[in-house]
Image (cartoon, rainbow, N blue to C red; front, side, top):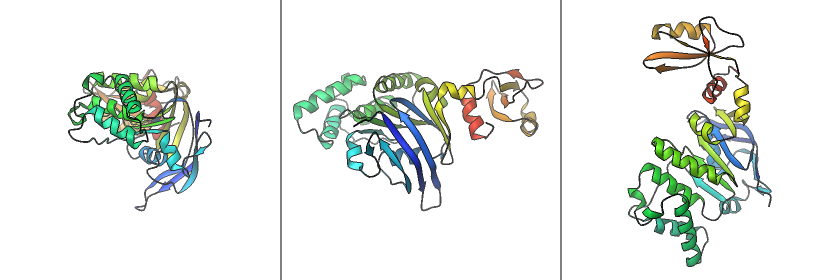
Length: 292
């Protein structure tokens, strides 16, 4: 089976409460780390849950190579690794016992094979020395690394990671980045996040979603080209913000040392503004605010 490409076509999902979570989502995702970026409520988790066979789509198709994901859920689960936003753990169960149990559930009946695999995975995510500690006693970063280990049981061809670095300190985030980068060299890893830094650090390919729609799909470098030499910045007074928002295409505003710093979008220089070094955050907000 050719599993190097995940092809999603016209995927739609309308919940009973009237929320249109996915609106004709079409994406082509190749081997490597793919960043799915969007604000909370953009439809990212709905897409992840659909691809992870946890919910049905109303219409559309999704293929991993030749495998029809929506019609062959059991087959997809054999080659899927999934780390949800909320990864629950069993209390008072050690990492080595829990991984062994999860490997058994995934169909690995040989005790010696499971033991070898569990040892390999715990080494891979730098948890081997903590293998006899209960997972419930782990720090947030350690739990996320354990989550990656359970994703890797059985040599998956697709890994889905939903909001993985929320709440992690910088050191834990970097360790997590390194593990994901290594994994993404050989398989498809979809990283769903609202943190622009995650995508910037890890991904060459990305999509931006908002209100159920894909607003951008392509390379991170190509995304930056969309706003190259078109982002301008200025420090202003808080009382001036509304006036600037009314008179300029404001991409974003944030406080720097207590003073608002605004980024504006324009093809030409803006009087009183300085040229800003464009970044993915500018692309993200410019797309969300429909400026590009």
